[in-house]
Image (cartoon, rainbow, N blue to C red; front, top):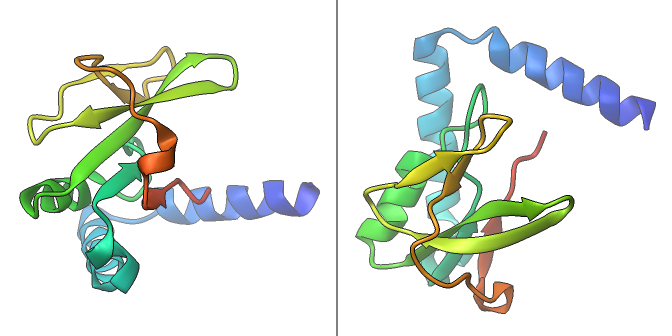
Amino acid sequence: MKAKKDFRAKVKKYLSGLNDKERSLKNALLTQKLMELELCAKAQHIHCFASFGDEWDTFPFMREMLAQGKQVYCPRVIGPGLMEHYPVSDEFEFDFSSMGIPEPRVTDAPADPKIFDLIIIPGV
């Protein structure tokens, strides 16, 4: 567990040290590499976290997936250890959790997680 904690601290330090240009380039590269994957090309129902802080900016990726006619869903915390997954549109109507994490507004029924054929989660 200590190794994981140390690794997370190292990655967070690295990410927080990137300047705007470096961050923009790395975000674009990661988005491009993800979209080049066959799994991504075939996916029709994509679950993706809504980024915040120093995380990879997922909004350009989600915007592109929506432009391709794919369905995109983001998580919303509904209780300790519990999430529901809601569809998002290119308008990105989000509320913010008590921790400042963007969560989709509840405008429809939650999605059944069994429909997701690609799930993007934060790595750190």
